[in-house]
Length: 214
Image (cartoon, rainbow, N blue to C red; front, top):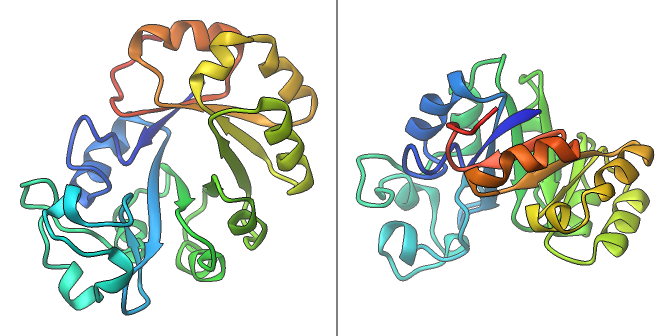
Protein backbone atom coordinates (compact mmCIF):
# COMPACT_ATOMS: atom_id res chain seq x y z
CA UNK A 1 0.00 0.00 0.00
CA UNK A 2 1.44 3.34 -1.08
CA UNK A 3 1.51 6.27 1.32
CA UNK A 4 0.76 9.62 -0.36
CA UNK A 5 1.19 12.83 1.62
CA UNK A 6 -1.92 15.02 1.19
CA UNK A 7 -0.83 18.62 0.49
CA UNK A 8 2.62 17.47 1.57
CA UNK A 9 1.30 15.90 4.81
CA UNK A 10 -0.54 18.98 6.03
CA UNK A 11 -0.65 17.75 9.63
CA UNK A 12 3.15 17.96 9.75
CA UNK A 13 3.73 21.34 8.15
CA UNK A 14 1.95 24.25 6.47
CA UNK A 15 0.01 22.74 3.60
CA UNK A 16 1.47 22.67 0.08
CA UNK A 17 4.68 24.43 1.18
CA UNK A 18 8.26 23.45 0.47
CA UNK A 19 8.88 22.84 4.18
CA UNK A 20 5.96 20.41 4.39
CA UNK A 21 6.99 18.61 1.21
CA UNK A 22 10.65 18.29 2.19
CA UNK A 23 9.69 17.11 5.69
CA UNK A 24 7.30 14.50 4.34
CA UNK A 25 9.46 13.14 1.53
CA UNK A 26 11.51 10.67 3.63
CA UNK A 27 8.34 9.20 5.16
CA UNK A 28 6.03 8.77 2.17
CA UNK A 29 6.06 7.16 -1.26
CA UNK A 30 4.67 10.29 -2.91
CA UNK A 31 3.34 13.74 -2.12
CA UNK A 32 0.08 15.19 -3.39
CA UNK A 33 -0.11 18.91 -4.18
CA UNK A 34 -2.73 21.27 -5.62
CA UNK A 35 -1.97 23.42 -8.66
CA UNK A 36 -3.78 26.39 -10.13
CA UNK A 37 -2.82 29.45 -12.19
CA UNK A 38 -2.17 32.82 -10.57
CA UNK A 39 -2.99 36.24 -11.98
CA UNK A 40 0.22 36.59 -13.98
CA UNK A 41 -0.02 33.09 -15.44
CA UNK A 42 2.43 31.04 -13.36
CA UNK A 43 1.48 27.65 -11.93
CA UNK A 44 1.29 27.92 -8.16
CA UNK A 45 0.80 25.30 -5.46
CA UNK A 46 -2.28 26.29 -3.49
CA UNK A 47 -5.55 24.50 -2.73
CA UNK A 48 -8.13 27.27 -2.38
CA UNK A 49 -9.28 29.61 -5.12
CA UNK A 50 -9.35 32.43 -2.56
CA UNK A 51 -6.49 33.50 -0.31
CA UNK A 52 -8.35 34.40 2.87
CA UNK A 53 -8.01 31.09 4.75
CA UNK A 54 -4.43 30.46 3.71
CA UNK A 55 -2.79 33.85 4.04
CA UNK A 56 -5.48 36.19 5.37
CA UNK A 57 -5.82 38.23 2.18
CA UNK A 58 -9.22 38.92 0.63
CA UNK A 59 -8.28 38.17 -2.98
CA UNK A 60 -8.46 35.32 -5.42
CA UNK A 61 -5.37 33.47 -6.59
CA UNK A 62 -6.39 34.07 -10.18
CA UNK A 63 -6.37 37.84 -9.56
CA UNK A 64 -3.02 37.96 -7.76
CA UNK A 65 0.27 38.13 -9.71
CA UNK A 66 3.19 35.92 -8.76
CA UNK A 67 5.23 38.97 -7.78
CA UNK A 68 2.78 39.51 -4.89
CA UNK A 69 1.77 35.93 -4.20
CA UNK A 70 5.29 34.67 -3.56
CA UNK A 71 5.78 37.10 -0.65
CA UNK A 72 2.71 35.98 1.31
CA UNK A 73 3.15 33.70 4.34
CA UNK A 74 1.10 30.52 4.67
CA UNK A 75 -0.99 29.87 7.79
CA UNK A 76 1.02 32.21 10.04
CA UNK A 77 4.25 30.33 9.28
CA UNK A 78 7.48 31.51 7.69
CA UNK A 79 6.62 29.55 4.54
CA UNK A 80 5.55 31.03 1.22
CA UNK A 81 3.27 29.75 -1.52
CA UNK A 82 5.59 27.90 -3.92
CA UNK A 83 5.44 27.56 -7.66
CA UNK A 84 5.16 24.13 -9.23
CA UNK A 85 8.72 24.55 -10.48
CA UNK A 86 9.87 25.13 -6.89
CA UNK A 87 8.31 21.84 -5.78
CA UNK A 88 9.86 19.84 -8.62
CA UNK A 89 13.24 21.32 -7.75
CA UNK A 90 13.21 20.22 -4.09
CA UNK A 91 11.39 16.90 -4.41
CA UNK A 92 13.74 13.89 -4.36
CA UNK A 93 13.56 11.73 -7.49
CA UNK A 94 12.67 8.75 -5.31
CA UNK A 95 9.48 10.45 -4.08
CA UNK A 96 6.51 10.38 -6.42
CA UNK A 97 4.44 13.46 -7.22
CA UNK A 98 0.65 13.58 -7.53
CA UNK A 99 -0.42 16.91 -9.06
CA UNK A 100 -4.07 17.74 -8.53
CA UNK A 101 -5.37 20.07 -11.22
CA UNK A 102 -7.72 22.55 -9.55
CA UNK A 103 -8.96 23.97 -12.85
CA UNK A 104 -8.82 23.39 -16.58
CA UNK A 105 -6.26 24.77 -18.99
CA UNK A 106 -3.23 23.74 -16.92
CA UNK A 107 -2.24 20.39 -18.35
CA UNK A 108 0.27 21.33 -21.04
CA UNK A 109 2.16 23.67 -18.69
CA UNK A 110 2.09 21.08 -15.91
CA UNK A 111 3.37 18.41 -18.28
CA UNK A 112 6.36 20.60 -19.17
CA UNK A 113 7.05 21.68 -15.59
CA UNK A 114 7.29 18.12 -14.24
CA UNK A 115 9.05 16.56 -17.23
CA UNK A 116 12.31 16.02 -15.33
CA UNK A 117 10.70 14.12 -12.45
CA UNK A 118 10.57 10.34 -12.94
CA UNK A 119 7.30 9.55 -11.13
CA UNK A 120 4.41 11.94 -11.71
CA UNK A 121 0.69 11.51 -12.17
CA UNK A 122 -2.16 13.98 -12.41
CA UNK A 123 -5.50 13.87 -10.63
CA UNK A 124 -8.60 16.03 -10.70
CA UNK A 125 -12.31 16.15 -9.90
CA UNK A 126 -12.71 17.81 -13.32
CA UNK A 127 -12.86 15.27 -16.18
CA UNK A 128 -12.19 17.98 -18.77
CA UNK A 129 -8.99 19.02 -16.98
CA UNK A 130 -7.81 15.41 -16.93
CA UNK A 131 -8.58 14.92 -20.60
CA UNK A 132 -5.98 17.56 -21.48
CA UNK A 133 -2.95 15.84 -19.93
CA UNK A 134 -0.53 13.35 -21.46
CA UNK A 135 0.59 12.15 -18.01
CA UNK A 136 -0.87 9.18 -16.12
CA UNK A 137 -4.21 10.31 -14.76
CA UNK A 138 -6.57 9.59 -11.87
CA UNK A 139 -10.15 10.74 -11.40
CA UNK A 140 -11.05 12.12 -7.97
CA UNK A 141 -14.61 11.67 -6.72
CA UNK A 142 -16.66 11.70 -3.53
CA UNK A 143 -19.84 9.91 -4.62
CA UNK A 144 -21.48 7.98 -7.49
CA UNK A 145 -18.94 5.16 -7.68
CA UNK A 146 -20.38 3.52 -10.80
CA UNK A 147 -20.74 6.73 -12.76
CA UNK A 148 -17.30 7.94 -11.73
CA UNK A 149 -15.62 4.67 -12.68
CA UNK A 150 -17.35 4.83 -16.06
CA UNK A 151 -16.01 8.37 -16.52
CA UNK A 152 -12.52 7.20 -15.55
CA UNK A 153 -12.73 4.43 -18.15
CA UNK A 154 -13.77 6.91 -20.81
CA UNK A 155 -10.80 9.11 -19.88
CA UNK A 156 -8.41 6.14 -20.04
CA UNK A 157 -7.36 6.79 -16.45
CA UNK A 158 -4.70 4.72 -14.74
CA UNK A 159 -6.28 5.09 -11.29
CA UNK A 160 -9.33 6.23 -9.40
CA UNK A 161 -9.11 8.33 -6.25
CA UNK A 162 -12.39 7.91 -4.34
CA UNK A 163 -13.25 9.25 -0.91
CA UNK A 164 -12.41 6.54 1.61
CA UNK A 165 -16.07 6.15 2.68
CA UNK A 166 -16.91 4.65 -0.70
CA UNK A 167 -14.55 1.76 0.00
CA UNK A 168 -15.55 1.34 3.65
CA UNK A 169 -19.20 1.10 2.57
CA UNK A 170 -18.53 -1.49 -0.14
CA UNK A 171 -15.02 -3.02 0.09
CA UNK A 172 -15.55 -5.29 -2.92
CA UNK A 173 -15.45 -2.20 -5.12
CA UNK A 174 -11.65 -2.29 -4.90
CA UNK A 175 -11.37 -5.71 -6.52
CA UNK A 176 -13.86 -4.67 -9.21
CA UNK A 177 -11.74 -1.58 -9.96
CA UNK A 178 -8.63 -3.76 -10.15
CA UNK A 179 -10.42 -5.96 -12.66
CA UNK A 180 -10.83 -2.82 -14.77
CA UNK A 181 -7.05 -2.30 -14.34
CA UNK A 182 -7.42 0.77 -12.13
CA UNK A 183 -5.30 1.44 -9.10
CA UNK A 184 -7.38 2.64 -6.16
CA UNK A 185 -5.97 5.40 -3.95
CA UNK A 186 -8.40 6.70 -1.32
CA UNK A 187 -8.21 10.18 0.13
CA UNK A 188 -7.95 11.50 3.68
CA UNK A 189 -9.07 8.51 5.76
CA UNK A 190 -8.83 8.75 9.56
CA UNK A 191 -5.89 6.83 10.93
CA UNK A 192 -8.16 4.30 12.63
CA UNK A 193 -9.62 2.99 9.36
CA UNK A 194 -6.37 2.61 7.41
CA UNK A 195 -5.96 -1.09 8.37
CA UNK A 196 -9.49 -1.76 7.12
CA UNK A 197 -8.73 -0.03 3.84
CA UNK A 198 -5.54 -1.99 3.46
CA UNK A 199 -7.44 -5.23 4.05
CA UNK A 200 -9.86 -4.16 1.30
CA UNK A 201 -6.89 -4.03 -1.08
CA UNK A 202 -6.48 -0.33 -1.79
CA UNK A 203 -3.25 0.55 -3.54
CA UNK A 204 -2.67 3.80 -1.68
CA UNK A 205 -3.93 6.15 1.00
CA UNK A 206 -3.70 9.93 0.63
CA UNK A 207 -3.14 11.17 4.18
CA UNK A 208 -2.39 14.33 6.14
CA UNK A 209 0.01 12.53 8.48
CA UNK A 210 2.55 9.85 7.56
CA UNK A 211 2.14 8.14 10.98
CA UNK A 212 -0.42 5.52 9.95
CA UNK A 213 -0.66 1.89 11.14
CA UNK A 214 0.81 -0.71 8.82
